[in-house]
Image (cartoon, rainbow, N blue to C red; front, side, top):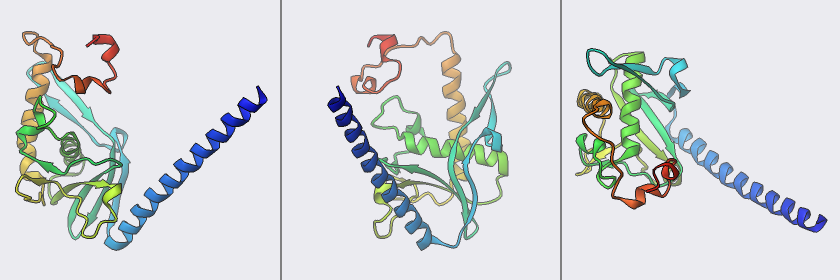
Amino acid sequence: MSENNDELIKAQNELIGILFEIIKDYVTKIISFDEKNAPFELIALEGNKNSGYKKELKIDAKRIVNISGFIDRIERKDGVVRIIDYKTGGDRKRIKSIDSLFSSDKNDRNDAAFQLLFYALLYINARGFEEPISVGLNNIREMSITNFDSRLFFNRNDKINDVREYLNDFESLLVDTIKTIFNRDIPFSQTDDHDVCKYCSYKNICNK
């Protein structure tokens, strides 16, 4: 029994050591990237509803929905506010269109981009509409690449330098989507895409 405990402790220590090295590598890449891009003004880290990043959406005459989120990082450089979300995976920066962010087809959708425009709505509600706003993904695995660019872009590599011009359409589509959820005449149905179910928190409930 003692030998088994020793092996377990050894394995746990090895795992902790590996995780420590991964985290250290991530932190090193972030600091190095910040050094290259300095100077900039840090506005907020992990901003949430307690920091004012929340918004009321009027769905109809009877319903108002409160939305909020946790924004990884907000900074200002050269007169542009930059809303940044950190990712450790290979999340895509390319989006087909604003409409595609609400597609039921996960291959058309870009959830990471949706998240950033959602954050931009929250930021504007808290801080105002006056300054240009850029949104971007800092994929940590890519941050050491030469000429790394966090900005989102459309199909033809058109960089989104100021997301404000797209937010009215985004908010309208968001409201329409929430209206659909509340619509009793539209039944909920299970997805036909089994890949969606692999990591779903509710797969044991729907028994898909």
